[in-house]
Image (tube, rainbow, N blue to C red; front, side):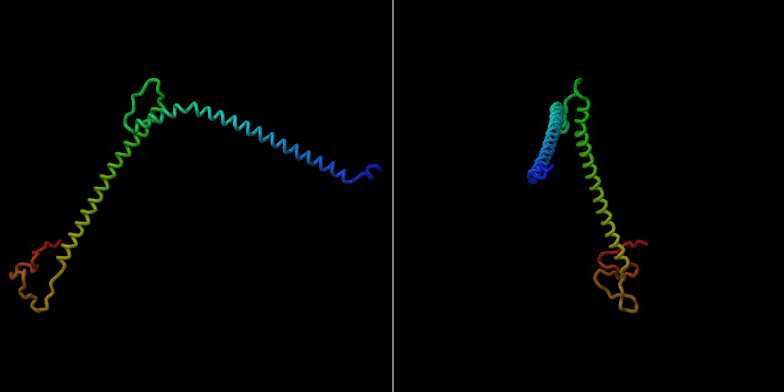
Length: 173
């Protein structure tokens, strides 16, 4: 024990530091190996998915071509060996386009009818206002007798209404 106490104290701290550094190094190596393993497994999984996508690619191309043909209206006849799912999926855009065209035509007709109805109702309303305004305006005379002096367009006969040059209007009751 006396030898231990007599040795250099820095050497002991150097050994402790070396052991700590080796533990850190071991931990970092293990973390690196785990990360490499995870990346290896991940890349393998991605490669498998890429191969699956490559296998699906011809089917997707076939659906795209059939869809474009259906939109153009030149859908070829169905074959016996053709996938019915692809055929049905290709017909959907054509039906959607046809429905959209019909909806546009009907909505244009309805919009035209609504505009025409509104215009006619406003025309009738303004005409009715004119008729009512002409019936409700009375000629006020400053004379006590209630007779007006003769003027242009006024009728001299007492059985006719004194309405002026435009004639009489039937007043709604």
